[in-house]
Each structure stands twice: as structure tokens, then as C-alpha cells.
Length: 443
View: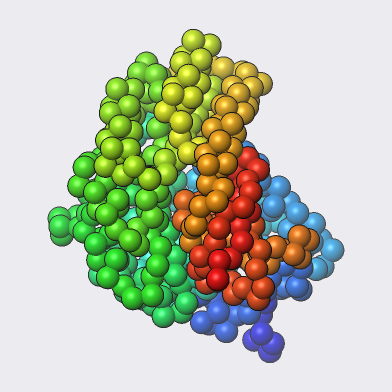
């Protein structure tokens, strides 16, 4: 190359996708490519897509179309599409969108340089089932705020929920070795990371794909030993796989956030059975009781699906009452997305999109009241908070206390002078609005 090639990476979807994008960026940078941000001029746009639900697919397609308009104007030369969209649709995607110069699937991540330089044929064209998962030896260029990192400990999923397209897109569960994860965490700590967020499609399934004695509990104990890491946050714990030992490890640790992210999806037995979830309402209630008894100051987060086929008004009302009874600290709500290739696609009794959205709104409004009351109780308390950035609009620093996960929960606006992004400070909560907090640094 006569001049350094510049590539802009646009990453869509979840934190797991973000890790894939960081790995690709690291590989490209190691091979002499300059990764550019924002509106900076670029030769190529690499779009790492999501296609988990219809809304994500539409966002991915719109992003590709926006890039194609830049290409038509001569502002960029090439469009490369990676991630879940090409993995799901293979060569059909490029036939439908000829403006794409190259596609790369999950298995192509370690060879991403080939698609930049020569546009080689992707394994995604044949819709090969993914087997790749990165390790600590591959380079990463982090896109997260300084001090904060994600570590993907497994990829794929061997659960078979009737509504979910993830196994078809990401393949069956495959886990990394604990040694590799620990080595990565040590490297991140040396580079200034103080908070690591552990991610996978099902964190509690970690170790199920091998016979090496790996499991989440062993991993957490090993990660606790790493100097420099202050917060360890496990994200996505499957309800029926959470035992008392795991609860106790989390509740007794100074480093592991007492944060239980437990997507229940619904509360009603009939719906849970149709969803293919391996627990029932009583199991959820007993689990919440156990967590609150063994970890009284724990934060409980969940996610829910409204409008699943066959969800009656009575089912929804029971779900709403359940949420008000259990009082999760925070939750996310999704409307059911009818995905081709999933068992639920052919289920009868589909709920209209309008009704599903209305039900989601009712849950969000109920949760807003619950979260607002919880946050109001935090006023006057002392907490640790990590600073992520300074807001030019408000003059406040933006960050999170230990009970707030990145991207999915509220934020904490922090008053202070010359605070350093990536550093953890002691703060006092002084006010709250719905999901967000305001705090002052305590000297």
C-alpha cells in the first residue's frame, strides 16, 4: 500500500458483538491499518452487524444503505459487512445488496485482513456453523471507556428456546479455557482496566462444553486474585443454573459486583413452557428469595418478552403483577420478534405488534416507579463510582456506581474537579431521577 489504509468500524448490537469488533480492529491495526473514529475520512467502512431480532436486522440494513450512499458519493471505496447478518444469510445478503464488497462470518474473524486486502470468499457464504472463539493471544483495540472492558468467556448457545435464533447464528456453546480468560484479564489490568464485565449467551453454562473442570464459580475465584481489577460483573445468569454456592461466592466477594442479571423472559408457566425455558414461576420466586436471603444488598436485573404467541391478557396481567411483587431493581423489555427458522415462528395465537408494544410500555412504566423508589433510597449513601467521560453539555462527569451495568442500566452524573476517566472514586448520592443518579465526590 502506498499510503496507510483507513478503516472505520461501525459495531451494532450487543457487547458480545463489540468484543468481536475489538478483536478485528486489533488484527487490522497490527497489520498496518489505521482505525478511524466518528466522521474522520476513511477508505473502508466495516459494519459488524446484528440480526438477533427484526429490529436489529433493520438497523443493520439501514447502516449498510447509509454506507452505500457514502460510496456512491466517492467518500469511501469499500464496504465490508461482518457479524451476525452475513452469518445468518450467507451469500444471499450480497446478492440482495450488491453494494457490499465483501462479507465475513464468525469463523472469518481471525482472517479479517484477507477480506480487506483481497475480498476472499467467506465461510458465511456456505452458512458454516461457527466454531471460532477468540483467546488472549489475539490483539484487541478497545472501544469501551477507559478502565472498562468486556471479556467474552464463551460463545454460542446450546439452549433451545423456541423464540431464539442465536444457536442458528452463533452456533453451539463453546467455552474458553480459564487460563486464557485469566491471562486476558491480567493484560487488561496492566493496560488500566479496573472493571471487567463477563459476557456470554449463557454465563452459567460456562464449562459445559468441555471436561476440564471449568465452571463459572472456579473462574470467578481465579479472577478475584488479579491485582488491579476492582470490579468483576457477571452478566446473563440462566435462572435454573444458579445454585447457593454461586450466590455465596458473589455475595462474599469484595470485587465481584453483587449484581444478578437473570433474564426470566416471563413469569407464567404456560408461556415459559412454550418458550422452552427450563424453569417455572415457583422456581423463579424461590430463586429470588434465596438471593435476597443470602445477599441482602444484591441488585436484581431481568429481561422480559411481551407479546409471545399465545400470551393472553390474563397472562400479561399476571406478569405485570409478578414484576410489582418481586420488584427487580432494573429490567429490560423486548417485544416478541417472529424469527424464521425458530419453532415459535409457527406457533398460533400471535399478538399484534401494537399490543405487544403497549404491554412492554406498561411494564416499563411500572418498573420506572420501582427503580425511582430504589434510587431515592440511595440519596445520602456513600458508594464507589467509576468515571467514564465528561459531558460537554452539562459539565458533569458521567459514570456508574457498582450497581449499574454499562449500557443497560442508568448512569450517575458525578460532580467533581479534574476527575480521571477510568478511575473509581468514593461518592455521595445527592439526587435521583427515575433510573439515573447525581453524586458528589467525597474527599
